Amino acid sequence: MIKKKNLDLDFLKILEYVLLVLTILSFIFALYYTFNNFTEPEMINIILIIPFLIFLTPYLVIKLYDVKKVESKMQVVPRFLRDVVDNVESGTDLISAIKNTVNNEYTVLNEDIKKLSNQLSWGVDFEQAMINFATNIGSSQLKRDIVLVIEARKVGGHVEKLLRELSEKILTENLRIKERKSNLASNTFTGYISFIIFIFIIILVFNNLFVELGGTVAGDVASGDADEKLASYLTLFILLSYELAILSGFLFGLMQENNIIRGAPHVVVLTFITFIGFFFFVSL
Image (cartoon, rainbow, N blue to C red; front, side, top):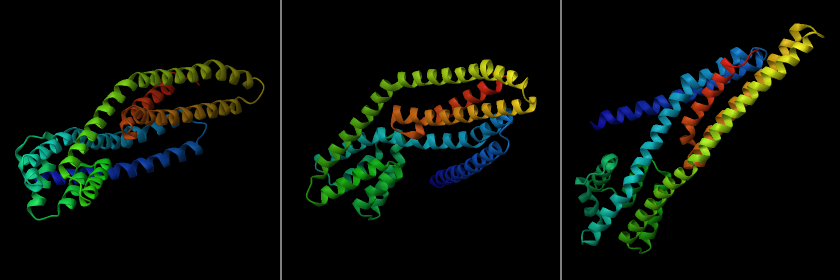
């Protein structure tokens, strides 16, 4: 069972790297095509959406899955640490206190706690086992906190007090993240509305101003030259809009949940809004 889970994790990690490489290569190709066919905005719009649709979206889904898995584990860590502290305060030594929690139910954290207990049973040093525990969970912040606890323990700190303080710190941080997400949800909604208005204005201005000016210019110069200039302007608008969609999406995730990867769904939605706007509502 453990081998199967490890194989699944390895496959996801390999798939993640493959998708990342394909995303980068497809973006390079899309930009190469764009700058060599600057007067073909309709095709450029399609070429630009392909990396998002085929490669970047699956990659972001996998990354988002990893982030959510770490977050769900961090929700349970405070309870695990409190149980260990309660066992220590009842007179059990630290190693036995950790082993005693194996039979408790910690949902997504069960496997990591079993690994921690097994390592301690095999004679792995407590400090190294705890660092491995934090590494398996995947939280760099927890790993730093565990290192601080270990250093404080070495200079004479009471481990039960240190672990209880760590539990309270993580719990407070989890509550702060939830509160921040709730408070900034309205700002994200406002950001979506602002982006849609931006795309609407770009399309409106192009359809009603640039196209008419292009028709006027076409009466004075060669029609082909005017059409190429008009197409070039539209390509610039498309590039600007995609850039804004990507930056805004990641900014929403960073602003609302202090994690840029949590902006992945916003990036996907905003880029598709951009594609639909220029594909269906622009008249060249």
